[in-house]
Structures are given as C-alpha cells and as structure tokens.
Length: 129
Image 1: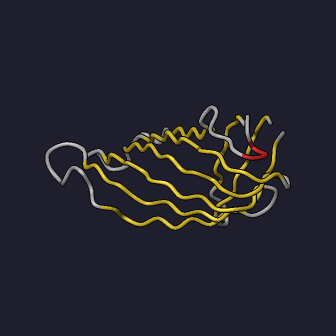
Image 2: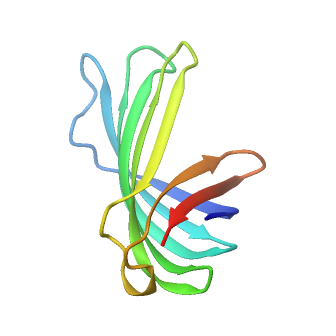
C-alpha cells in the first residue's frame, strides 16, 4: 500500500563528537517531525552527518521513531535513514522501517519512505502491514 502527505521538520544542531579537523567534518542534529494525512503523528530522532572537504559531497545516517496513526491504526515504528550525495550531482536517499520495530496496531509493519522536497516536505510511504 502507498500513502502520501505533508510533514514539517525541525532540526537542531547537537554537540558533535568530532570537531573541525583535516578531512570530513562530523555533525549531529536532532530531528522533530509532524506528519499529516494518512500517516498522522510525530517523530523524534537523531542524525549523524559527514561533510566532505569537497563542497556538495556529504553523507548522513539517522534513526527516527514515529508515534501516531497510519490509516487510522495506532502505534509506532522506527525509520532508518541512509543518505549520500556527491559534488558531481549524484544522490541517494533510503528510508526503511526497522524490522520488528512496529508496536500496537502497527506491529509487523515493513516498508520504505521517500521524501519529496517541493513546496515544503512531503512523504511517499510504501508499506506492508
């Protein structure tokens, strides 16, 4: 099944483990999202990033826990992010439900999410329940 809808995101810097030095700069951010539509609720998470010395090249990983409803079914699940981009313009972003992380009526959920950045943020969530 596939659902789509808007979401808002608020990211704040957290203290980094690695300060500026030779090579890539490592950073941390908190992630707070509010989802609307068939996926309705909020999520909180944390992102780790690496900014290459080459402008436009970076990578990140993140974990966020969603709590709310999916098509009226209440529960929670965890999304894992993997994102990478290069100065050459190539990019890849993967968000997947962590296996067996679903609770309540969302127990057993699996799937992938796409983030669309046009006129704000929206999601395309392909899932099995």
